[in-house]
Image (spheres, rainbow, N blue to C red):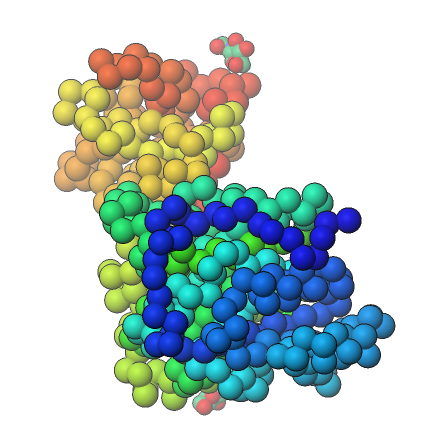
Length: 472
Ligand SMILES: *[C@@H]1O[C@H](CO)[C@@H](O)[C@H](O)[C@H]1NC(C)=O
Ligand SMILES: *[C@@H]1O[C@H](CO)[C@@H](O)[C@H](O)[C@H]1NC(C)=O
């Protein structure tokens, strides 16, 4: 009952509407949309939104890569529809290709300067195309993502879901996640709200690149299976090989966040795809991928071809992964030597995370507080080492008046931390106590903090969860 031809709320920052683009200087775009058994209405709405909200002088063609759909309406009726639209072309795959091969095939078939990849269930917003073409015209090695809005899969309401700008990143399992901007980036975006900003990774649902450059740096990894992981691989590759990944705040595209897939997609395929990324790009850091995969992936025992990118690496003199950690994504922390557990320490009572206070609150000490885990830049990765040290930010956690505080690691004095079941126990010559979430008064006000209290197995506030490193 939702019209396939509808207006959507303009979700851009206010300043975007007054940006002027010199249309004749912008490159023209081919839009590539892979699809597999997409419902007619969502596909039709995708195409109508593109036709309604893209300047025709900038739109060369829309290419549908039909990845072996078997629904009747996607046969002859789709071809009739394409004929009516004119610039819409349908290309049929003869075997199931998956998203990676479909998109690369589309890029080869396309004739525009720029290729824009969209999923088959999106709606583009007002003025979505110009800002990304503008950025790609400035720098052919940029690969750019529109800001992603969401369409509710049940009500089809267009939602400006991520009110503040967000970026994409990943952890050592190489899986894509949305993440808030760092405070430094927030400030940069606030100062220039229309300018595209850097992101460690993009998500595959919508992105654009200079077509020739995209194919030359290797397109997408066509050795991956069916769906997922290709976006993170492309992101790491483009950063390491001299390009950049960006998000445009003035270009908005909404994506239906489905609850599942209309096709069979095996979780093991996703792990396999992520493993390819790790093997191709992490170099000496690749073992962290295996450490953080709970044994789902093991280092390759046989000679599988993970190095199809060798030619690209040589041609573009691609850098080592350490460069990416230093320059693009310092937030992806490397666990300290000897870590047994590493990650966010989550309280199972409150589901809050460990994070040191910004300022000293106990004399000169920063205490370990508990904050909403969503604010990842307030929380930290903690490492519990084999020798009982609890570390954060290269510092050691020590005890002052039963508070947990950040301190230097120089002295060996003090006790040891250890997990006993779900409880994080601190043992020294006085005996043992349990780290427990409590509310405490400070000069600056009340804070939820980590505090040493007598152990009590029925107290949920003393139960914790953290990622255990899988030994390989
Ligand atoms: C893997 O490849 C290397 C080098 O090409 C070769 O020496 C080795 O025998 C191969 N191993 C297996 C198990 O095929
Ligand atoms: C242990 O914790 C439970 C749940 O919070 C509480 O009801 C109980 O009184 C505690 N026992 C002691 C000895 O503090």
